[in-house]
Amino acid sequence: MTTVRKGAKASQAKYGSDVIVDMMKAYDIEYVAFNPGATFRGIHDSILNYGGNRKPEVIFCCHEEHSVAICHGYAKAKGKPMVAITHNIVGLQHASMAIFNAWCDRVPVIVLGGTGPMDTTRRRPWIDWVHTALVQGNQVRDYVKWDDQPYSLNAIPASFVRGYRIATTEPQGPVYICYDADLQENAITDSPEMLDVTRFSPPAPMQANPEALNQAARLLVNAQSPLIIADYLGRNPKSVDSLVELAELLAIPVMDKGGRFNFPNTHPLDITGGAKEFLQKADVILALDVQDLYGSLVTLNRTTRVTGYVTEPSTKIIHISLNDMLVRSWAADYQCLQAVDVPICADTSIALPELIRLCGQLSTKNKKKKASIEARFKQVKRHHDTLRKKSYEAVNAQSAGDVISVPFLAQQVWEAVKGEDWVLANTGLKGWPRRLWDWTKPYQYIGSSAGAGLGYGLSAAMGAALAHKGTGKLCVDIQPDGDYLMTASALYTAAHHKIPLLIVMHNNRSFYNSEEHNMQIAEFRGRSLKLAGIGTHMENPAINYAKLAEGFGLYGAGPITRPEDLGPALIDALKVVQEKKLPALVDVVSASR
Image (cartoon, rainbow, N blue to C red):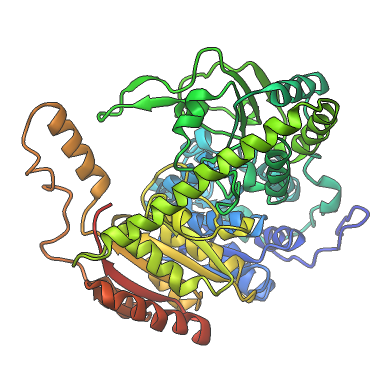
């Protein structure tokens, strides 16, 4: 007899894997992405024949790295997790890079796995032995928030609920739950107790210490040259409005580090890309969810060795974040420990409104501050306007030649999409889209991979496009060629599931980051730079990405080599995405940087 707690629905499950699908349905999981594997064939069948392939619906991938990266992009765009499933040891190892990216990016991904029977008498010869681990979660334990391997059918609901809760509690991150093949495939004789998932929600966000917030407010209001640095604040879109309000209240310039969309680039207080002089003269810095505060405050030489702080030793630093709540020692997704005068452990979405209230009270009492705030606003605005002007000049200066420059590429994509309700789901053009486009809405940029693992871009962009499917939003992936080649078969998933996505291939025919490092080290050692392209260039043969796209069933255009051909090619591809609701790829041969 099925036992159901108050508020939970009775399960009609007949097999263990049906219960797993029940749990996914309880959380309204829209999609489950996987490369098929025998160890989770029970779950696969239950999704199709028990769950009707609806909530969750299968997203068929050709590699486990695609599966997790799709979930990564989806969660950032949707604000809720989807599920990836990996096939025992080998699938989990393939997925590990993407799981690490999600860990560094503090993104909730629910990774499920299957394993060969732990009961050795039930294993198939050879394959179940070589593909079964003891314990499988060891493979990723250092870069997930939590892992589990339920021992019994009765343990499945509580395990899934705990995993979902942990993944979605700030600071968020991936979790891994492994299911024994026997547990999935055995018929149910005594139905497990189902849980009312509404009673297991993540805890309310953490507020800041009142004394620390008061100290922060006094420092900011009394500062002569304050500066705000924001990085992951935009993971909660409402926080962007709060940041704008705080910046305007005290006329504080804002440097957006880009972990998420944190601040509109059209705002006159945005000085991203030109913050060095503000860092040098800052007397108070407010850092908001900055993953690498140390790296934000130091300068580097050509061989990436630290040369010194940009800020003065007397500069007061306030940092509001949850970084210290989620730390591992296996890999450092942080740099040196930065000295901070007012460290505040809190969720910025909750702390910022209170900080604004306190700053408002203090600034109202200080009548002399009004004139200095107005003067600072005008000064920062002049700097902001100069930065924007220089960016536009870079387009004009570099677009006259025969080679498609990076600024020109960014500007041409903007010309094609600016009239649409667009989302930049991935970009390999450094800061140029932010410098040249108008970023005004929090959903318009979802951030980078954080872990810098190649292979993230295309799949994460597809995840964002899945999240926005049917909303009318145009998702754009400005795709680096080297990153694409790591997970090229992701195009099959895009075509098979008809995921509307505009893919613009930034085809510089090089793993240029490595080439640039080669040039820097050669220059530092006084050696020739001519050989730096060996082992990094992809010109012999040159890859035709448009034909690759066509081979996967997508619309492909290019290679585009002439600047005058780029705009029309983008417009034609955009029509395919919008009118046919299909993915389209434009292969653009462009300069390296």
